[in-house]
View 1 (cartoon, helix red, strand yellow):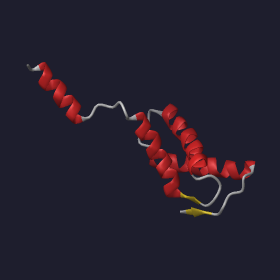
View 2 (cartoon, one colour; view 1 turned 30 degrees about the horizontal axis):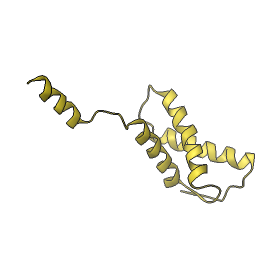
View 3 (cartoon, rainbow, N blue to C red; view 1 turned 180 degrees about the vertical axis):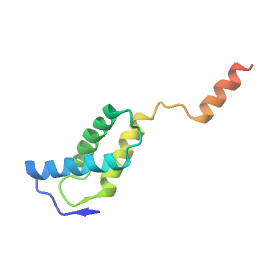
View 4 (cartoon, one colour; view 1 turned 90 degrees about the vertical axis):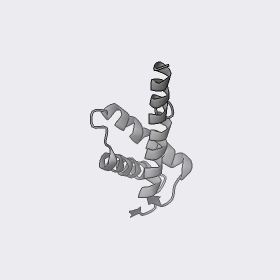
Length: 92
């Protein structure tokens, strides 16, 4: 998806925020975590403006912001390898 260049105006920024919110809605899987979804939308908006600035908006730019948000949130998550190592440690 390619959206025409959006000017640095309130209307342009509002269109960008809506596009980000719609994209997050399309891919969001944590159905009981609307609080995180709102955080993701805000993060995606800040991320887009920080990384890409004003220019052509492409959906993959927005998806990159979603991935960056989730990656940041998952840095302390437990992997299967972590859980296996913990289980082996308990069995000793």
